[in-house]
Amino acid sequence: MAINIDRSNMDQFYRYKMPRLLAKVEGKGNGIKTVIVNMVEIAKALSRPPTYPTKYFGCELGAQTQFDGKNDRYIVNGSHDAEKLQNLLDGFIKKFVLCPECSNPETNLIVSTKKQTIQQRCIACGNNSNVDMRHKLTTFILKNPPEMDPQTQTPSKGKKSKKDKKDESDRHSPEANTQQQMAAQRASGGNIDVPPENAEAADDDWGDEVSEEAVKQRMEELSGAAKGLALTDDLEKTDKDRLDIVYQLVKSKHQSGELKKCIKEVGIEAERLEVTDKLPLILVEVLLTDKVLTQVKEYSVIFRMFCEENHRAQKYLLGGLELLMGKEYAATLMPRVPHILKIFYDLDILDEEVILEWAKKVTKKYVSKEVALQLREKAKPFTDWLEQAEEEEEDDDEEEAEDEVVYSTTEKVGEQPIEPKAAEENGKEDEDFDIDAI
Image 1 (cartoon, one colour):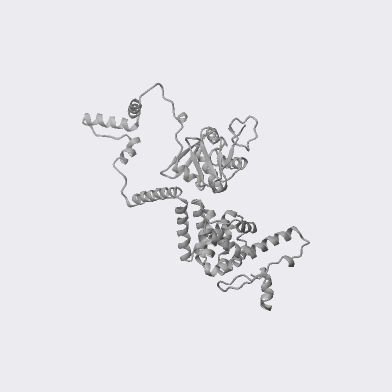
Image 2: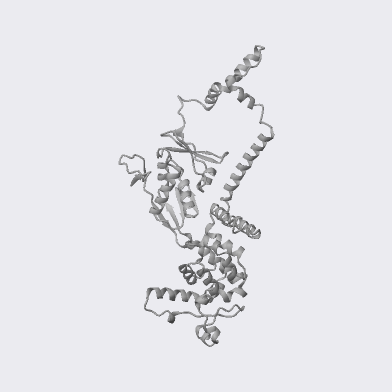
């Protein structure tokens, strides 16, 4: 079924159409992916390479993309329904297809790799406008500029060889006319006069200006272009290499005491390198030690910035905590697993559903399976309390005191959490300790 390229245009005589996006989910688990079945047809209707809208989806969803031009397979990692991708496609069309002046989709992208800019030229109204270079897709477009459409080139009259075309253009060029005049004057023994309209061009032929200001300007242009190339190359690196770039940035800012001031800069860099969801993993490694219960309060704002309402980031945070509690500081922190999880929960860094899902799913992604099981067993008093609290919300008639989980807040290394019965036998001091006292 064909739909309007500009879906906000309700004109019944609107003639610019494209096929409705078709998506197919393949695989399962970590290998699940979404194939855009008719991406080639959509791209043809938009006069854009099919890699552009596919990469745009990846930028917007924070997912990796794959291109197989030979088999016309364009893939976005993860499970995404067609309607969601169609809405994202509307954003791509608005930013990179429709003319901002007349809203006509008959536009071409003009890429200048030297100036690191992208212009959008409208064939309908003749408007030239600069594309917003803040979007991450622009980096990909600069790296992969569109090929010149043969239909947009000026047709030649009759068949001519490349040599004939070159000779003809050379004969009619201003430079050729000037050269012919200069040759004629030399032959006649006269002075060589350069026509006024070509005087500037002739002066340029003597070489680049060597003044201090001109040299400085050329160096700035060169460094800017080199910087653009470096930024583009970063996206071609592996996940591990890109994570290492962000790790070094976080580490240096933390060591200099500027992390809290520069945390937005860190976030922008992580977003540019497409590793925002994994940033909490780095934050745990750099910021937290065996004093985690004190440190997390100090850095709670930073953790919330990247974890709030982002379950994927919270899962990576739990992975970092597994390494911290089960490997790096296991002797000190293993007995305090429920206390650590609860403080992250109380500070609104970890959501209840993410913690419960983590408790039920044992993986060996970060630590060995035996250690992962031990961590979840240690966390059981807290996760049981979460489950019971959830049941209490569903049944208002159930008494809260009957379902309360009580355990000790001792900080002694190697000491096991005290069960409810043991707490009662431990004297008056331990009788007052419950889940809310942690």
